Amino acid sequence: MNPSIIKRNAFTLAGVSGDGMQIGAVWEKLMNLSAKKPLAHKLSDCGYEIRLYDGGSCTVFVGCAVPPSFENEDYATLTLPASEYASFDVYVVYGYDSENSAMPD
Image (tube, rainbow, N blue to C red; front, side, top):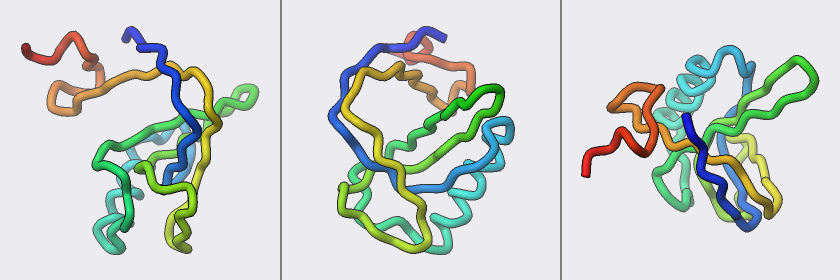
């Protein structure tokens, strides 16, 4: 996959985290939580998957963008600083190996 390099202002996500080797299970955890306790105040319906590497281990955070002041005891939050990021767009309808070029015109 070829990433896009994007510049973003700081942003906050609300969601869940877990083992980066069990990404499907972490997304399922978020979907179950969202079904039971829908996320209020999300800024869009886009989902984000943030991978955090520390040595040989990986933690993944999945969630939706929310206002910086978001508070909810059921959801964890992650605030990312303003920076340049590698962005990989995945369109599930084409499978998890898809990218922008796979989208029809």
